[in-house]
Image 1 (cartoon, rainbow, N blue to C red):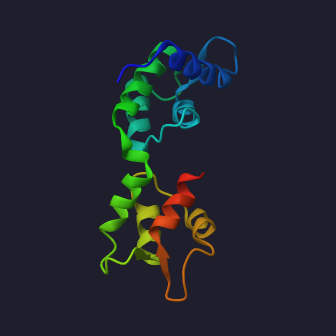
Image 2: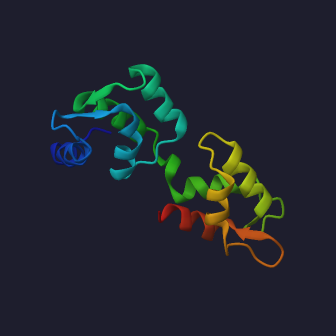
Length: 146
């Protein structure tokens, strides 16, 4: 999938919003935020790869960023609702569209992009039913809505 000139222009506009010094460069640790602002959903491993390749504390110019952006975009639907739904299905032992609060908590606090217990408490608040189960389709939609 090749980006159009208009798409590249929009990506550059977003990139430049993160340029604090006006030198058309951003800190490497902002790459994930820029990708998310552009509608991508990079995982921790994607961001770690960028930091490892360029070095922590370095600056990234637009051409470098664009390469990482395109690579992340090629991964396709890893951040789509359908992908989330498919991932949760492996925890849905009853096949009823629900996953236990404890299983969701475990995934969110121990997988690649770990969250703190406090963060998990905040996003799970009010999501479980009287049996401690969470409708993972509704939960996924909630997460995707930002």
